[in-house]
Length: 271
Ligand SMILES: Cc1cc2nc3c(=O)[nH]c(=O)nc-3n(C[C@H](O)[C@H](O)[C@H](O)COP(=O)(O)O)c2cc1C
Image (cartoon, rainbow, N blue to C red; front, side, top):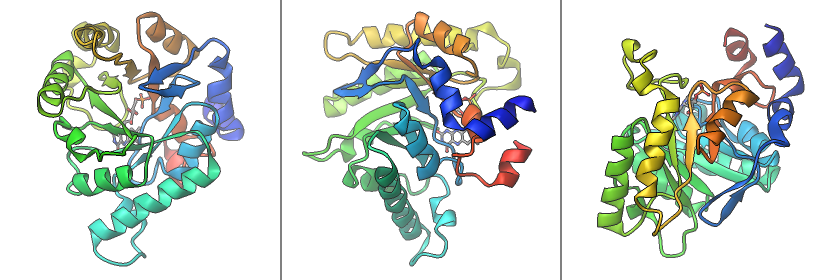
């Protein structure tokens, strides 16, 4: 309880600056991420422009989640897909006003308005698209000639990482700009079964080196940094994963109870 109170009082700064002097920047293509912390996209109003801008202002990547934007912007004009596109534009623009840092968008493949959300993000020149909850096999097809948006799939296995790299290369002559690997302890719904939670074979510490091996198959063509996610909650966790070869970490749960998080106070207190 003390931990939650303390985070809420001091906000994002306490999370990131506590570790900042030990962490190195890394690059997602030509984009330098000064603080190797990505705030995971959290749906239905948990990570919007407020949280994303706060993390981006500290040098990490702040991420707006697309899930449920049409519900949050229910008072705007049109049907659900139209409200969602309007909401996404609004949130990206609000984040840009609050921060000059790196702003990303999280778009789950399972969303019925996936294509709308990807096209809107690219048109709004968002810095990075993170996409998981399914294999984002056609994501590069949405890039336009002049777009600079980086594409980062989220996977839970080295097999998925390999399939995405192979298909993107074959179909679009494009490789991921980074890969997020989420282990079984990640917050939110994942495809892991209960008995896999404590199985070493599925542990994040096992998955990270395996996904790095996949990215190394392409090292002559592109540097693909690997970002570790799931159950990371301390500076020691971050340090250990970076020592293992991860370029950065993605965290969700730890940001939920901060003052900057966009969820309601009721949600934060329950959380
Ligand atoms: C409340 C909540 C909502 C989430 N919503 C999404 C989402 O919309 N899309 C997604 O890809 N991941 C989602 N996630 C996963 C996070 O982006 C992140 O990868 C994960 O939380 C990392 O693990 P951690 O919570 O242990 O730090 C969610 C996580 C939480 C806790």
